[in-house]
Each structure stands twice: as structure tokens, then as C-alpha cells.
Amino acid sequence: MRKGLSIKRIIKIISLVIAVVVTSAFLQQYVLIHYDSNRLMLEGFYLEEKNTIDVGLIGSSEVYAGFSPGMAYDKFGFTSYDYASASCTATAAITQVKEMMDNQSPKIILMEVNAFLYGVDRDGVDVNAFKDSSIRNYIDNIPMNDNKKAFMDEYIDDDLHIEYYLPLIKYHSAWNDLPDSLRYMRSCFEQKLRGYSVLKGFKTRTRVFQPLQKLYNAEIQKDNKKAPLSSTAEEEINKLLDYCKKENINIVFYRAPHLIDEKTVTRTERTNTLEEIITSKGFDFYNFERNYAEIGIELKNDFYNYDHLNIYGCEKFTEYLGKILVDKYNITETQLNENQKKMWEKTAKSFRKLYDYSDELIKTQKKYTTLEDDTKTIEQIT
Image (tube, rainbow, N blue to C red; front, side, top):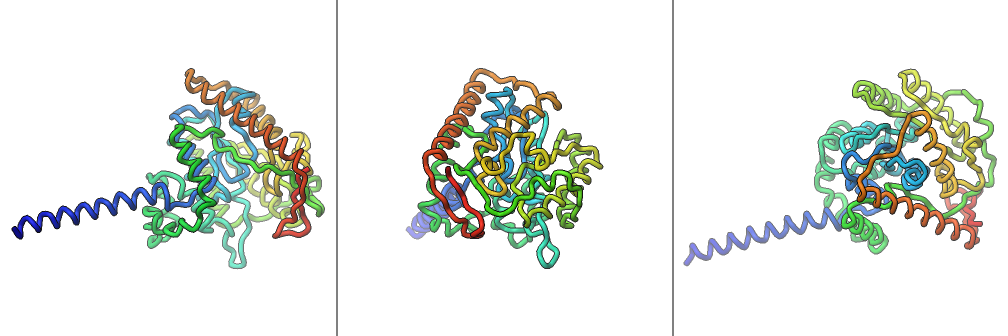
């Protein structure tokens, strides 16, 4: 009798343990995690069929705000993906390259260099490279694999590793994000069921931004003054360049267009320093802050804030950059089967629908909003 009770008790305990493990796994995989656009866009990349992306764009938010894979496919016929996260760190750059190469076989990688251009704090430390939120925007949203483990071993304190293996520990209070996170949670579920990302990592905001203070975009066109990079940024860019050269990776670097005010002129000087480092090692670099007029970028119409092109600027920049890829780097139409073509045609149509919707919203809803962090500027929908 006692033996029977012991067996039943053991079975109940084992069942309880299994239930707790399964429930915890479900919660940290689908519920108690940080749902945002970074998760949606990065998870979408890992749903793409192997060896179907010919152009991989990596970096920070300038990537997914400035280049539309759907429009590029519609106009030039090649496939691409915006594999980027907000405020991506210089320390994550090499991981981005490795993940792109491990999951696809792109003919070329384009890296936007914002991650290397942050300044230093009062202690001389890069203000973004070791910022927890910036790190997690990317690292939290990629699979647990050798690249992720290597990143954690090098840049994350050992006692914090458990939070990356078991994100439930970090995000146990994610309930507090509800209901705001529900729309991203729903989008992630729908994306998984669909099996691919509709916009291929692209994201925009429906607004036109018009700063009131003086801009320095014209002044920096011929300004070759250089400012030093942070020691972390300099170390990481050299590490990345050496790796790409060793692995024979076809990578091109660029600086996306920005609105430049008095506070960010120094950032353009760091860009000049970065360009010198990159080109001295034999890699191509395009500074699109210098030729915004040639691209057709209008400073008071084509941005949604200081750092990001809006839907109008994106259209112009995608066409300009796409033409460079075709003319200079011989990127041709991607060879796809019928099902893949239908999916990419849907991506192209989805971007056009988004463009038309954004255009209509901007033109019909007129309002002004003062930015909380800078009372000298306004966001204008005209």
C-alpha cells in the first residue's frame, strides 16, 4: 500500500515538474518576453528560406528606415533584407555579419556605420556600446547559437548570462507592458504562421519632420575635419574589417543621410575618421550625408526625425542605392521559384500600399507636435 502511494506521489511530482517546465518554456518563448519592432523584424529574418537573400543590409535603425526591400525587388528584381536593430552596438557588428552569412549566401552585404559613431561619456566609455537596452535590442532577438554565445562570452558579465539563456528572469514583469505589447505579440504570431516577413525588416513612421534651428548639411559637404572614434568603436571596426578580409566577405560600408545640427557636426567628423580606416583596408565606403542633394533628398520633407528618412526619403534612397548595387556591383535579378516569386511580389505590393497609406495620411492630417526633449523643433504633418 505504501509502495503504491509512493509511486503515485512520485508520478505527481514528476508531472508537476514537467508542467512547470513546459509552462515556463511557453511563457518565456511567447509571453513573458519583450515584444517590439526589433523582435518582429529580426525574427522575420530567420523565417526566410536559406540562400534566397542576395543583398543583406545590416546595422542600426537607419537601415530599416532608409531602404525598402519590397521597392528594391519591384524596381531591380533582387532580394534583400533589413537585418538591423535600433541603436545596434559596435560590439554586435561582427555578430550581425556572421548571422547573415550563416543563414544566407548574399552576393553582397551593406553595413550602415552608425554603431561606430557614438561619442564617449565623462569616463571615456562609448555611450552606446555597453548600454543594456541597445545590446538587448539585438542579442535578445537572435537564436541561441555559437555566435550568440561568443558575443556573451566576450561582452556580457558571467553572472548575467543566465538572463540570456532564461529571458523569463529578465522579463518576468512583462505583464506590465500589456496591452501595449499586444499588437507586436500578435504580429509576431501572424508572421510565424505565415512563414515569412511581409516587409523584410522595413519600418517607417508616418510623419514629416521640420527642425526650426540651423542645419549644417550644406556646410559639411567639403569638411574633411576628423574627430576620434571611441576606443571601443576603433577596436571593433578594425576587428570587423580583419574578419571580413580573412573570410573574403563582400561587404560595403555606408553612412545614411541625416539631418545635421550643431550638436551632431562632431559625428560627421567621426564619420570622416571611420571612412579613412575602412578605405585604408581596401573596403568601399559611401558617405551619403555628403551627396544628399544628388540623391534628391529634401531636408524639410524627407525625414521623420533627425536620424531617419521617412517614406518619401526612403523611396529616393532605395532607388539611388539600388542603382549603385546594379551598376557598380553587378547585382542582378534573383533567381526564384514560382512560390518565392509570389511571396516577393506580395512584399512589393505591401510596400506600395504602405507608401500610399502613409502619403495620404501625411497629406490629410495636419497637426504640429513639440518634441518633449527639444522645444526648438517640431514634428509637422502637412
